[in-house]
Length: 510
Ligand code: MCA
Ligand code: AMP
Image (cartoon, rainbow, N blue to C red):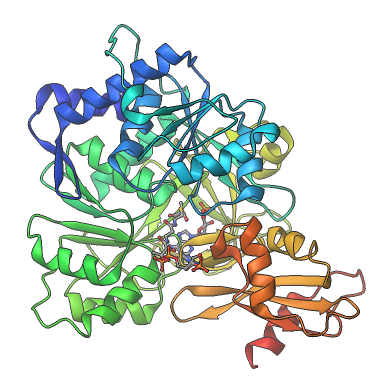
């Protein structure tokens, strides 16, 4: 099968009454889900969507997200994923760069996009979930009115068709759109579901946001590919997740970022009932500490399976489903995919035990960055391997450990923050003369965003909250600095480059 939407259609034919999705007390069978998908696809066609046109999804977890996602693919469209925390700076860039013609959002998101209309000439309309909204510039349609009579005469997407543009940043320049083909999505979920022994009998508690790869391309895709079911929640909240995990005996799997596991462990301390282990707990998107791994195994009776992925490649490596799950490592490449470690400077292959950049190869690797041929060329080695930007080493028996990053990146609670983007916003504040943004360890989030700021003359009493609010007005709020240190000067090397490791060393102790 070339696409996940085709798998959905097949399940709706062969097992129409099987449950696909549960959300806030409502169950959707495969028949119902696919019928809504087909209707949304027809609505898109009627509206005038052409194959290859981009549709942005700027919405929290809900069934409409899933219907619009598969409906867009059914109609030959391309999905642009947009984090719901994004504000004007990110929205303007993502929607303009992708040239999205239509966006699915809620009335609040609609108002935000409507304000940007003059900067977004390609955006022709909004589909709104949860009410009509009060918009002035863009035509909008309520979700329900967009569902049309299905037309089954058009074909399913082919493996080589573009499916998703997932934005991910770099050290320089703005976020780049990683182009994932239907074949990338299908091949990766095929090997992943096989490796994790995911079957139609499984039920996943899906609380990860669907607008990122982890929730969407692992959680949702795996569910639909195997004909299983998912209980979808709007967002993660430790106490309700713990009680659902314990009370709903049909659940077999839970996927999360390390912050979620840490919070579940905290919550478990106040939980009186017995803790029922699920078949599979998976962690990824950020490093899982050995302490959380060990404590989770003790408390929940199961070793977490840690895996490693990226927007550009979906899932790269996994600890074994059967056999040792080695804490602190991300395991081995999925079958059918490859990974190697090369010297960062010479690009020569390294031997086991040596640390270098992780490169990956296989049918899961994306096609390139949307309209960025130079960035695409730089991202691949001459023999076609993708340079992940992650540093790691491989043990003699093949387990990969990630032990650094070749690029500047902060991972906070599983969300990526590129310091440069936050620095650029800080520098727009009249009180900031110089700014350096970096990560410091955080017991809950893994890393937290911190800024060192040289105040402009007369602004020596700038506060963290003032600068955090300033960032928050323009950027997703998870990118705002949690601490701001005022310094007299930034340490620089002979070339003038800020030495962030020195700042980190100094400020970590404060
Ligand atoms: C929320 N806040 C955060 C974060 N999340 N601050 C720093 N880091 C975060 N990750 C801030 C909000 O901006 C807000 O600030 C305040 O916390 C409360 O927001 P709320 O939404 O209630 O937060 P939360 O429920 O505590 O969220 C924590 C979370 C969430 C559940 C861990 O961050 C989350 O869902 N993370 C998962 C991200 C994910 O799916 N990543 C996968 C990327 P204020 O009050 O000031 O507004 S895909 C990927 O990385 C690759 C492919 C891979 O390998 O998976
Ligand atoms: P993104 O750009 O959002 O796709 O984030 C991908 C990045 O998340 C990777 O390049 C890694 O740096 C990081 N990552 C994902 N999974 C893990 C993991 N299990 N351990 C450490 N880092 C991870």
